[in-house]
Amino acid sequence: MFGIGMQELIIVLVIALIIFGPGKLPELGNSIGKAIRGFKKSMDEPEEKSGNNSESKKIEEKKE
Image 1: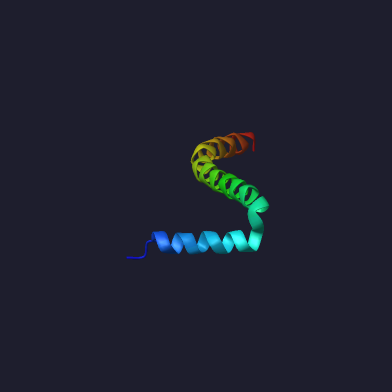
Image 2: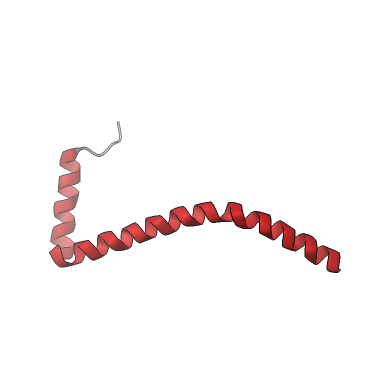
């Protein structure tokens, strides 16, 4: 219903090619890929860090 079809994808790619030029598109794709990977990594990390934070809070409470 709200998906992007082949025609829409081609139009978006042509517009991106016109705006950024053929030299910048690989760099742009690379930076977008890094941003997505960083976002996915940050979504996984808080679960791991939350356990460490609660342990560090317990240690700080014992010191007081």
